[in-house]
Length: 272
Image 1: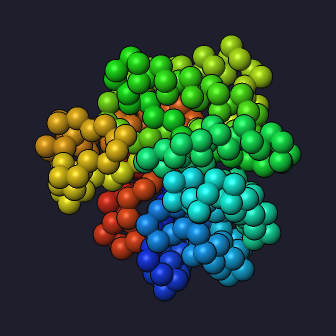
Image 2: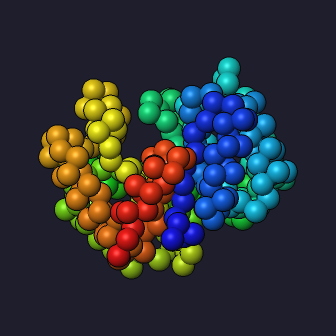
Image 3: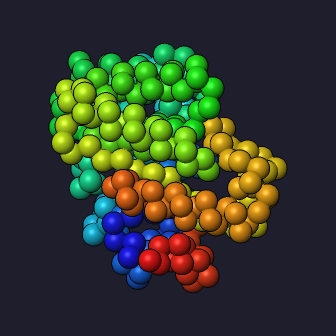
């Protein structure tokens, strides 16, 4: 059932990573995303790429690369480290696709659009990148900025996938997916035929709702209806999953599902 979906794995050390990867493989989950945040960055991130590339060759892994967390002492050095990471990823990772993110706080002249512009002079078009898109901005000015940024990213011709932020408003999501379809129809030079769209997904629980209410994530828009009722958040999540599947959007499950209980709770959302 999870064969065509992706699962994000966070971890503190190699022991925890190994346990989670083995859990996934035992349940035939082979498509994994590794975030770039917390301690998963810089030297440890490189060690992870090699560890998985050597010991878990059957996995299809997409690494996230945050220009906020991967910043070194200056922009030039940081950019060179990024280029080094691309080569390192080619060596150990058969996927050769990387999700580029600016980070929760964009660094001046060192965020995704800056990097895509520089890559035109340093790389070839065989590299595949994913970029983020938030479909849940309600203010017209914010929505316009997000759309224009996406068009600029696509104009680089490096982009092979779009990764949707998580949110709860299906009407807003529907509107922005129609926008993406219009782009593909009206501006074929932006996108090749292999473009994929992924959609972030959280399996709700009382604990996760409490965390989102107490400390909202930057850029994540969740309605009071979603946050104040587990029953309602379950319904909204199911509707979003159905929408994803009907529109060929591949779910990326960001929730922890590395116990039997978590795994079964996630399974229930995908039962027809």
